[in-house]
Amino acid sequence: MPKMRELTSVDADYATIGPNQTTLRQPIAVPAATLFNCLANGPAWKEWLGIDVEWTSPEPHGVGTTRTVTTTGVTIEEFFLTWDEGERMAFRFDRTTLLLRAFAEHYECTPRGGGACELEWSYAFEGSGPLGSVFAKVFGAVFGLQNKRAVKKLAKLLEADPQRFA
Image (cartoon, rainbow, N blue to C red):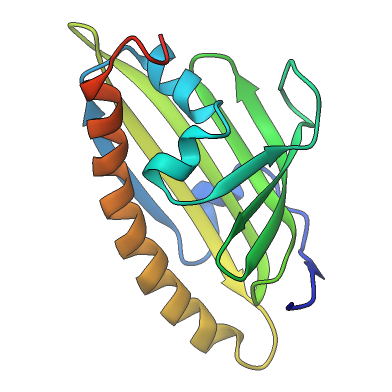
């Protein structure tokens, strides 16, 4: 198993201003609170992003909450920097097996009228070590493609059963 590495501690703004920054937007035909509830549901992440989420802090979740994310060969320990119930959340990676120096994500659930919303998912990261810039390019390309597919899958998941996370 790869070694866990400590990452540079960043704030919530890093997700929108850090290196290798990307923002994805996805309209979803459910209320913003329903989208947020899905994002706050650990098992739901497996369905739309293919990751296992284990909350390591008790409810209620908020700023300071922690969770561990795992997927094939990768472990990530996250720390929540922002938690505005029904609206937005942001977290950073504190430790991971990936070759990263820093990483943060921000999710904004914006009402768009008619019971619909828009997800705005921003993230930024920096590679680590002598191969950090090479890793960042490869990771960025793969992660970006995966996430573009994932937001569409998330929209389909929510729109197929709007009451599931209401």
